[in-house]
Image (tube, rainbow, N blue to C red):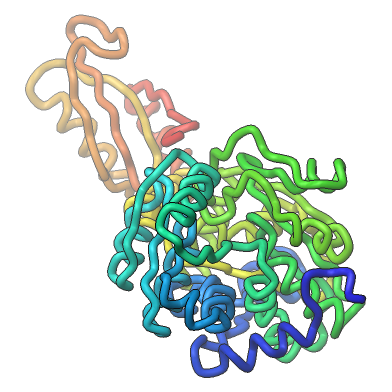
Length: 411
């Protein structure tokens, strides 16, 4: 008897069911990351999938196999966002009514996209787990058919089709890094890959702000994380599944965590150097690589799953700004000028002479404990790199403008 919820044949059957539904997403070389880390690295770009993430795979594979009576009742699913769109799209394709429960602070981009796919969206609770509890209550109240986000054999099998595509695209694969929320994605992929390429080292990645899997593995059963606080909302699941945890235990070689700053820098890296938009969850594997938490050996073929690209535009703007500061491209300075006509102009003109560009400027009296005859000025400057930033500061100091640099901005 198979010790797991599914076997390879279930994943292969899911692939047949999905053949005309999903996009066979590309496996792309991560050229800049490979050069930085010294080994060949590839991205499985599930962010280019229909509805912007891998979730359509498991959702469609589940709903298509429901009985006519279950379909007629309609389906309900809790989601932080991507499962919502996967279920909504699958239900729309199959002519099934869908109800989605999402946390109240779910990204607006994901809420709007789910509604556009025809689903009824109900916002409830602060976390994914709150949405789960309410979805179960509505299931009983309305007689709906529940579609689990990760802990169901058909969901796991659907996500596992990514593993089949990876093995075909990268037969020399040696290391695979997969984000973990509830565990459906990594469980299905790990079963497919380990069955076909047993030597592949598989590493799971969780957000440090919501990482129940390491504790669950240590305990030998699912453990609930005390909090879920991370920008990687797609993997902010406080408790792994009863079906997925044993598969992770048996098939995954290591689980690491990455913090939000590492995730932010990974989002920016993928955008800048691969021209791909990914959300926090989608960048988790890249964050593990960039931070050195998953090392890459020379000639070791490594891949990671960009599992979603549904990032809110406002958050993406903040991510870009944050990354530019960390990369030394934005510089925040506080200084003061003579409080007389021309005082501010002298400062701005000197900044221009250094080759820096003024992005924003705040000019206020009575601030930062400046003398009565001076006015405080806060400058946001665009510079070429960290070396240029320091040259700007040095030049301003020589010109008599004492500067205080805000190194932690915009935390």
